[in-house]
Length: 276
Image 1: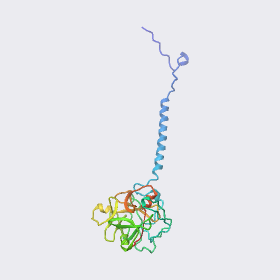
Image 2: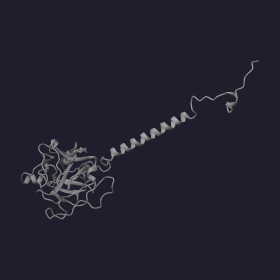
Image 3: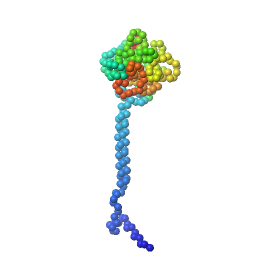
Image 4: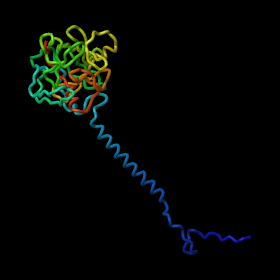
């Protein structure tokens, strides 16, 4: 029977000459795992900070208001000023190829006697907030472009375009009765002189008689949002949040919000005394 030499005790290497394996330090795998975990945590934190910084400049999805416009809230929906071109430079060419010029003239106060009528109510700020208790009163107004201050909303061939006033009939077609929104009382609807409503169809703004349907009421309701231009507002579709009325090639249409000065100018409008 072969003799077996018992393994010397490992806790007494100095007595029997046995030396433990020192080629790999104990706990090395744990140290590597801990280092990898710490590195992944740092990378995750840096990524989260970068995403937060990037998203901070986006408009609120709930409200649809551009973040650059939140800092400057207009003094109410209706501007009681007569049409004026002071401080505004009209860009050359079509709106699709022009650059916006911000008006530097101060916005008139709500007590100017030029417009008369009832005192305007405060415009809503977001769909997420509760409905405003002060509602717009029925009053006649014309809607003036910010970057084309000599042009106004004008019903032309069943569509709404941006045209300069020309004669009494043109002025009548550029004057609207602003009433409580058909589908949301804190928003707005626009009635023409012959009793039709402005509504969007295929994202184009046009005038049609009301058929009483829920879809028509939503298509004809627009909510005022803050604009980057003093005394102006943006008008957001009630049933297409994130789409605002803007002019392009002098045609009024619903268009998704875009990050650019041209879009902000094309979608900014001022309510002035009725031209008719």
